[in-house]
Length: 461
Picture 1 (spheres, helix red, strand yellow):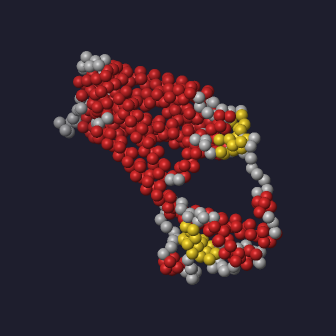
Picture 2: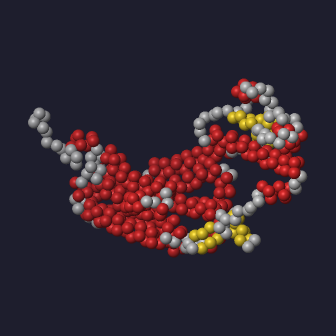
Picture 3: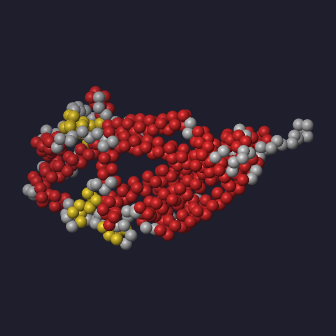
C-alpha cells in the first residue's frame, strides 16, 4: 500500500459528504446571521428619522430645527406631547422615544442667558445591545441642536463671524505624531493601531480554527480506528508505520484547511453583514486608502505611514510566518495524535480533547487583550511555556521588528515539535499504541483504568 493510497483512504474518512455539508452549513449560517444582525444594527443606528416635540414657539428654536432639516440627513417626525405623563403619551402616539424642546427654550438662551434644557424621553426596552441604539441617534441630534445653539449665541450676543466662532471653539489644532522602530511619522497612532489590529488578528483567528479542527479530526480518527480494531489490521499490513503516521497527519491538515477556509469566509461575510455600511469605512482604513494625516501638505495614508515607520512586512517576513504556522500545526497534530491514541472509548476522546483546547484557547485570549511584552514575568513564564503563544505573537513581533522574540519562540517550537514527534513516532513504531489508554468512568467500571478487566473480589466470587 503506497503513501498515496493511504492518504486517499484518510481523506475519504475525514472529508465525507456529511463533513462537506457541515462546512457549507457553517457558511450559510454565518451569512444568515450576518444579514439579520446587519439589518438590526442598521435599523438601530438609523438617524435619518427622529421623533421630536417642539413646545417652544420662538423664532430662535424654529430656525435651529430648520437648520437641522436643511442639512438633508435627518427627517424630524413632529409629535404633540400634551402632558408629562410620558407613558400615556407614548401609548397614545405609538412611539418609543422622543426629544422634547420645552417652552421658553429660546428665551432662556437669548434673554435670560441661563442654561436651557432639552429633554429626551426613551422607553426602556429589552436589555440587549441593539435596543440601546435609539439613544445614540437621539444624542446625535441633540448634539447638533447644542452646536447650533452655541453658534447662535455667539452670533446674536457677541456679533461674531463664523470664522471667529470656529477659532474660539477650536483655539488649538491637535497634530499627532507616531513613533515606532526608532522613526517618527506625522500621523495618528490610533489609525495605525486600527490597521495593525486588523492585520495581526486575522492570523491568530486562522491559527485558532486550524489547530482546533485539525486536532479534533486526527484524535477522532485515531481513537475510532483503535476502538474498532481497524488500526491493528492497518499496522499489520506490509507498509511502513511512518507512512501511516504521515498520511494521517497530512489528511488532517488538508481537512483542517478546508474547514478553516469555510469558517473564515463565513466569519468575513458575517462581519460585513453585521457592520453594514460601516464596513466600507473600516475597509478603507484597513487598506490605507483613507487619508489620515498630512505631511508637507500631502495626504499620508496608513500604509504609507507604516512603510515610513518600518512596520510593513516584507516577503521574507511572510515566509517566516508561514514556516512558523506550519510548525504550529505540526505541533498540534503531534499532540492530538498522542492523545488520540490514548483513548479507549468515545467519552475518553472528549476528555482528552480538553488539554489541547485549553492550550490553544488560553494564549489566544490572553494575547488578544494583553501585550505580552508588557506583561509580568509570571504571566510571561506561564504563557511562553505553551508553544502556541509564540504563534499568536509572531506576526506582531515581525511587524515591530522584535526578531529576538520571534526567533526565541521559533526555536522553542522546533524543540517542542521534535520532542512531540519523537514520542509520536516511538508510539507508532512500537506496540505502545495498542497498550496505552485512558478510559472514561464507564470504561473504568468495566475494566479498570487501562481497560483491563479487574479480578473479581471475594464477595463476587
